[in-house]
Structure formats: structure tokens, C-alpha cells
Image (cartoon, rainbow, N blue to C red):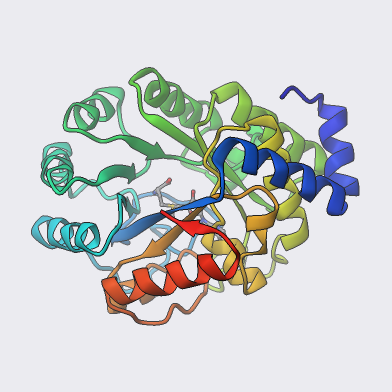
Length: 316
Ligand code: SAM
């Protein structure tokens, strides 16, 4: 559906049950009652980037760092496939100590277990994305974070919005299901930024969009900033569902941490990511402060399925 910037600004400002019901109806029509459950494996918290909001940023010396071996990454992914997951998401900080070939090999091995593979490993040259695609990677998540180039630059002193968008264009052209997205409530953001964020998802042609609130991390430059609003985040998800009816829209972990439930499932969302990161590493993948209970992979899968059923939806 096409919405003007003015339409989006009004929907974000007014929100309400009508917006959520509209988005929910589009979700039901386009995606049915299924909730797609993805296994999320955070395999390294090393990062060379300086993102001002992120606890993994290279300047955070307080954070103990970890890196999983490729063989462990493959065997955890295979365990997820046996537990019923149909997609594994491999996410990390921007860690150049894994070579493109090593990541490609992991993708190739995991694909043999029948799972789709989503990568979320940051910005790499086009030929690397092409190599991973040739190894079987199906999807790539790379949020654009904010559509305001000046704010982008202020929050990422080592990068630019145009570099990020170049990556997203490459991914799309290489045939990945491409996931963009952004944070809601970054310091310096305006309602116009939020509307531009939503329109940018459409311009990129996103197949997926992760929309979550900014949550301040105590060991970052933005420690004193207030968190983004859960209500506004849900409105943004609802508008994204209107703009991109067929897209996969997760109930982001950040929103679940902020709100304590997944009510965003009734605002247009249809995907959930369940961490399969081993317990000690999960605690160290500190993008923002949060506590995640320990559960083995099959138990975690059972829990998330029960939760989805409690919302009257069907896990897949
Ligand atoms: N390195 C990869 C990348 O750049 O896409 C993936 C890992 S990165 C930590 C994953 C996402 O975490 C980012 O896209 C960002 O939106 C989110 N994130 C980081 N810090 C956050 C914060 N303080 N609050 C909410 N989300 C945050």
C-alpha cells in the first residue's frame, strides 16, 4: 500500500486500536495465523564498529568478549533443526576474525540440515555477500538504523548511511530476502525521521523489517538517554505492515524486553526470534541490558511454541 509521509505522520501520532486492527487484518490476510519462529544464534560479540548506542561497540572495554568455533556454530544449528526450527539466524558483531570462506562453509554445512540460513554479520563487500549467497544463505538482516544521514553519522562516527544502503542494495540485487529496520526513540530522532524510516523500508524493497525501541546501555555514550516508546514502536510496526503487506515483521527482542510481552503480535508482527545462544555467551551478547533465562534448545522451542499458542496463533 502507498502512504504519503503526511499519512504516516498522522498514523504515528494518532495510533489507536483502529490502526492496530487494520494492521492485524492485513497480517491475517497476507500471512495467516502462523508465527514464524527463527532460532537466533549470537556467535561472536567482538565488533570493530563504534555505534554509539550499542553495548558491543569496540570501545566498550568492560564487556568480556567471546567467539564460538565454527564447529560449535554448526552443531548448535543442527540441534536447532532437530528441535523443529526451520531457520537459523547467525548474528554477530562485525568480527573480521571469521574469514568469508569460514562463514560460507558454516552456511553450507547448516543448509544440509534442511534449515534456511539468515545471516546478520554487518557490512561486508558485495563479493563477500555474493560468496555467502552462493554457499546457500537465504536471508540477510542489516537494519538501516535511522534514515536521517546526519543522525546516522553522529551515531556511527566510523560509517555513513549511504554505505549501509549500498550494502542493502547489494543484498537485494544478489537475491537475498533482505531485512532492514530501525530503532525507535534514538536521541535526536523526530517524527519526520520515523516516517522517513518507514518509507525507506519500502524504497529498499525490504522482505523483512526489524523495528525495535532504542534501549540505553550503561556502558555507552547514550547511557543517560531515555528508552524509546513501546507504544510508538508498535505503531511503527503497524504502519510497516500497511506499507509492506507481505513482509516478515518480527516481534523484536528489544520490544519484548521493554514491554514484557509480545502484544505487538496483534499490531502486525508475524515472526519471533528465539535465542539458542549458549547461556554464558547469551549474557555477554549485551547490545542493551537484558536478562534471558537459560533453557536448552528443545526446551526453548517448546516454551516459545506454548507462548505463541497462548496468543491464539500457530507456531511454524
Ligand atoms: N553487526 C550486525 C549489524 O550491524 O547489523 C548485527 C548485530 S547488531 C548488534 C544488531 C542490532 O542491534 C542493530 O541493528 C541495532 O538495531 C540493534 N541495537 C544495538 N544497540 C541497541 C540498543 N541500545 N537498543 C536497541 N537496539 C540496539
